[in-house]
Image: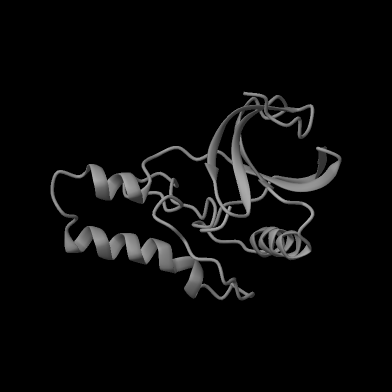
Length: 160
């Protein structure tokens, strides 16, 4: 499969997810010497989609919380004669909430559910959450951080 050439420093390796608005890629960053996630928009001809994408980037870039993913870079690239915005985030490892729920041999305990809700709600209750966002987290975007790592972050929202 041929992937877009977003920036010479990034070598796209695979698609992590697709949604109605965009695509998230896993890419190798030659400068960081590690993997990153790159989110871009599907339809650059739709001004509303562009506005929503840029609002998402601005919102995340201006937030600071341990459970909110950091933004490394943002820019534009050309694909099919269209200028498309993108932003670069850390590539997160770990199990998604979706996998945790569906691969668990038993239902999640009340304590586990409460802890996952606490992690997910933390950024929403933070005074650093200054802007309103109509995007919702999905079970694919929530990471389990109970193992002590910082795997849970807002990786992407319901609309890619």
